[in-house]
Amino acid sequence: MIGGKKKCIGLIFGGESNEHEVSISSAKTVFQAFNAQINKERFTVEAFYINKYGDWLDSDISEKILIGEIENNKTKKQEIFNQEKINFLEGIEFQNIDVWFPLLHGFNGEDGSIHGLLRFTKKPIVGCGILGSALGMDKILMKTIFSNLKLPQVNYLVFQNEDLNDEEVKNKFINEISKELNFPVFVKPSNSGSSLGISKVRNESEILQALEKAREIDPRILVEEGLEVREIECGIIGNTKLFPSVIGEVKYESDWYDYDSKYHSNNKITIPAKIDSKITKEIKEIAIQSCRALNIFGFARVDFFLEKSSDKIFINEINTIPGFTKNSMFPMLWKASGLNIEQLVAKLVDISLGL
Image (cartoon, rainbow, N blue to C red; front, side, top):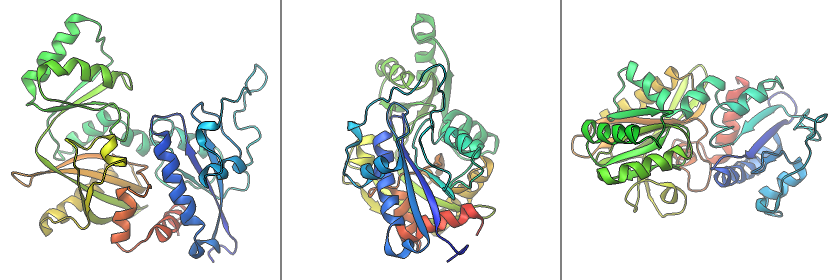
């Protein structure tokens, strides 16, 4: 046993983001993995559930949510705030935590917010830090950096903090998208995950509704050209040195890879993906290069498009806290690479400890 005693893992999940339910599903999988026989001698787990109102619940209630004794939607807003009481962590015992394992997908988690908070505890954190998390979450900044590095990307446009109620602004957006990009296009909020807030737009008449849908999540909007592509994904783990997983492919029955197809459909997963070895090598190299550029380490999933007609590679995005659900690609990629879920969570803790 490393270090002579069990390491206490602080598993944080839930949160206020629109990926609340996905976070709970991920946390259940990770909780079970740490409690598997192979890990019981090395680790204990303290769970910390953040409800949809942003309240932290104690570890007893949090664990009951993970094992299904309490439904998360039964938790209510806690009226704990007043002028003299501003410590939102009051009553939460986290002094015994040795390593934090945040599984908060979306904003206030994947964007680096939780990493900034946890830094004050002076305990190691599984995953990357504030900067890498923030850049990985923000699609516009991420793509700007990729462009400067001349990494291959689909054509895209950016619209930031514009007033969609202004007729002149609306017409300018519609005209620019129609002129600069080929339909179909995908309209995305800059900060979101699990395809939430994204629309596939097939013609000019659908642009405005898609922009308004994206703006509900983020006033900074990305519009990408849609190609006929294969969805290719690569897992990354490591610290000073990054290691790529085998490459996987997702084939979905829906028109595009939206929220429902990610979590509720019977997608066809192919691991390893049936692609040329030269393409595999290039994807792994770009995955590592892109993570290095954004200061992403610990673990991540890098998503690519492979154009069907040309086999051209396009980097899509990096997920710094990828899903750990039973349908999630990240743990499946690493299982195919030789690390089952129990070994994977232990490995991620070791990486955070520099072991």
